[in-house]
Image (cartoon, rainbow over all chains, first blue to last red; front, side):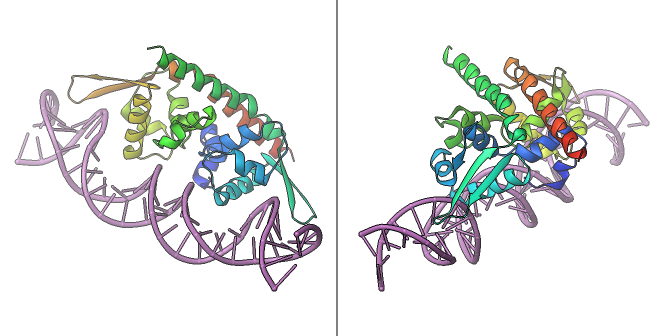
Length: 111
Length: 111
DNA sequence: ATTACTAGTTTCCACAAAGTAACTACATTT
DNA sequence: AAATGTAGTTACTTTGTGGAAACTAGTAAT
C-alpha cells in the first residue's frame, strides 16, 4: 500500500499497516522466513498469488527495506530473495499471529 | 475480508490474513485495546475512516468473534464495543508491530 | 414544528487491487 | 530454426474496497 495518508499518519499502527498491512505481504514474508528463495520458488509456494501481483509485492517489500534482492548476471536470469534485519524482526510477530489463529480455531472445533 | 479462498486455505497465515489482514481491522482492534467504546468515540478516534466503512468493519469483527457488541434499549441508541478474549489475545501482537515500526523508523532517522 | 442526539444505512460512484493472457530478453540446447 | 529456462512486463478487464452525501428512526428538548 502506497497510501500517503497511512504512511504519514500520527498513529504508528496506521503507518505499520501502510507498510505490511495488505493481504499478501505477511504471507510472503512469513513464507520466506530465514531462507533465500528464488522467484519461481515463491511463485510455487505462495498460495493463490499471480506472478504479476507477486512481482509487485516483492518490489514494494524491497523498496521498504524488508526484503533483499540479489540478481546475478546470468542467463537465464537468477534472482534471490531474502529478508533484511527489518524483515527478520517481523518473523516472531507473524509466528504469534499463526499461533493465535490456530489456538482460536481449535477453540471453535471443541464446541 | 470475506474471501473464501483465504479463509479456507491450508496455510494458517493465509487464514489469519483472511480475518484481520486488511487495512482497518488492526487499527480498530489496537485502538479499542482494553476499553469499552461507543460508536461515536470510535468514529472520532480511528484516523481516516468513514462511518460506512467503520460500520462494516465492526460488523465483520463481531461476526468473527473478535469484538463484542452490547446494545441498550435506549433513545438515542447506545451501543458499546469491547474486545473478546480472541480480540484481547491480539493486543500483545499488535503492540509488537507498533514497536517494530517505531524501532525501524528510528533507525532510518539516524542515517 | 423543528432541532438534537446516536448509530447506523443506502445508493451511486470512484479508486485500488487483482486477474488474464500474451509478451519480453538472451544464452543455451535440441 | 525452434524450443527452453528464468524472471519478469504489459495492456486490458474484472473485482473488491472505499468514499460521498444524503437518508433513517425514535425519543426528548426547544
